Length: 198
Image (cartoon, rainbow, N blue to C red; front, side, top):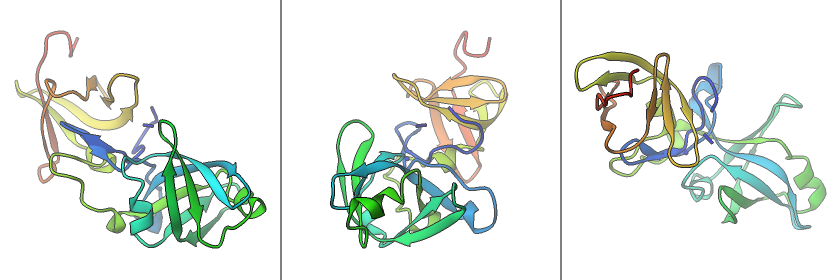
């Protein structure tokens, strides 16, 4: 990387100009701050230990390539480190995931509701011109006319395009509005369109 929620949200890679990233939710304390959510486990699928997940990433294959992931279960206040054996995209943002050592429906059922997390260090660099959600949230938004619109606090998923929300304005994540993103300066430059700042 889902997507409206307050604070750092799903880490979906944001496609150009401000999309393409691995999606998920940044954790709140300690080591968890260095983790991003890439999927939410919905339910078991079949009898061989697969689980259906809601993806928060445009690149689910990363779950296989990184070696292992952390599955966090907030209901029981515990985490497990598991190796992803396979990921099979199905419809939309859904996929079927098979974890090594999870070989039947009872074991898969224990994972229901869990969040699949990757350490930020394990997330591959995004393609050129692409950004992760956690890189976008917190950017200072400046217009081409020099107006400061505050920081991005939320990324809202819509049917047409995503929207970046600051404390003051909603910004459509489309090419003709978002002109550039400078991660070193921590800034997003947007076109000062008529009606956008009303």
